[in-house]
Image (cartoon, rainbow, N blue to C red; front, side):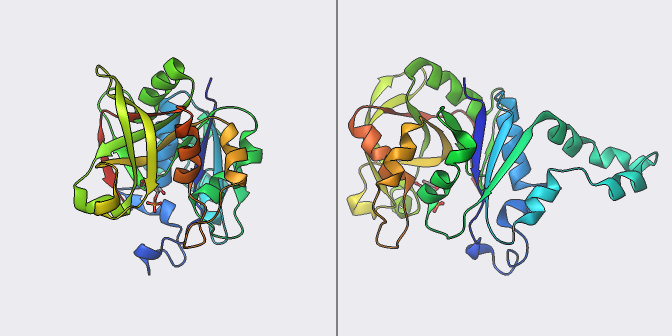
Length: 256
Ligand code: G1P
């Protein structure tokens, strides 16, 4: 059973400055809804109702968003505008939100490791909210849960990208294990390779199901040349033991 979803949300959102100077990137809206709320709704749609959010300095609005807002609620109560709060109230009432702060920006792998105490010794999902995934029937995480139930190992979502974009992604190589649902056994993973060094054009997107042994592995991963601990490097160690499945999901991803 996957009960918890971890959301790394500590980054500076540098590429969106100045918008992200005082507003967390995860709170930037698509239409009227912040990115992170889309992620939480995707987790809920997959039957996951404990959210483990790794935040950092300047991210308090995330906690406020997923909490009651008594003054606002009482102002709008009984007016026609009350309905505007309905959707977020449903989300708040459907989930439990837990938080931990990452004190230093040391990469995605370190952010996930920071969430260890919120997760414990059980398999868990990870959503990178800036990869917004649209879908027809089943949320991407629901699809991945089914793959996890079959293989009982770490699962990563992938998509094919143009070869000249490999340096923006973790890139995998692997062999097809099931044609009907597009799953691959991963044999190698490289974080943001130049096209000439990329093992394929199959890129990791921001949806993972991880087995809890990943935490021990992360503790021993050496930082990369930028001083960051990469989840891709930790997963590569699982992959060398045949314990990572990549899944070409159904749906459309938007890089936010
Ligand atoms: C992260 C991961 C990368 C993955 C990407 C998906 O990179 O490190 O492997 O392909 O998310 O969005 P980031 O975009 O945070 O630099």
